[in-house]
Image (cartoon, rainbow, N blue to C red; front, side, top):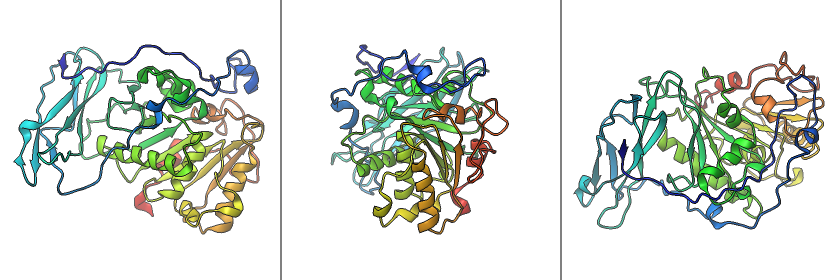
Length: 406
């Protein structure tokens, strides 16, 4: 085993999130959300835990006075199980100090006998206490079966969020071909506030919130899809404020761009419930960074008579909203109002889409992502004909959009 640093965390985890299941039972009979979760405990609002949301945002600003780290060798290394890892290091140049490669700190571990994606971190500070932007090398130890979710707990990287990571099987194997990035933002029950203080185990709450992370964890994800998938875990929402949350999500997007070999023109954001609201806000604030957005069971965070001056930024972003008429948590009219606000107030570059499922409930997201409520899917869905049917795989729709098309 190649080992530089090993993270240590508290091991006192208490599960406390709602298990949000699909609306279709194994026998094909439709079930209500209450029937699915009626025997499960409802989480109480816990007291704040500073570690989850008072995390400083990483400083990724370009500054000529900062040292620059250049990795030796490849940024992504693929090994077969049992094959030795040889650290190649990096070169560090600084405007005042010159070559300070000898001061480089290398942290991380690679277990060449265990399948996994391992991050090696490179950092340095010059004589003026100016720090370089941390660089990372990803080492993939693989066999023929690929790798499922990797857990990147809070504190193990410079990201302001802990997160789940999935890399497609061919990641790092194809030269000059960068995959798209799919950022998945979970619902309220996946917040770290519903977990105890073990950052690694806290990430299980995101998986238990269902959606894309659950599909990947269960081996139900289509491995032919080309996406790098990152699912950040939001610490808490109450009291944080819209601007703070948007800034923190943007910091995560920028972190992803410097850490993973992805195509910056094909970054997509999808979110359910709380995550859908955040996706709306992010598309308004940063339309230049995402190629398409999909908010599910959500809506605008603004009153229609108080839309911000920059609201029509969202009209630049290909948009597909989705809601079920039986949603008793967030009324489906919220998605209709948001859709109409774009149509009525803006001149969309690409006409937004909205699908309204007849029936269903709030926790419809898992069935949306496993495609069982696609037209022709196993749930035999019926859609409001005044809007768009869900008749195209959401993954194919996302991949049809790029920032280069604008």
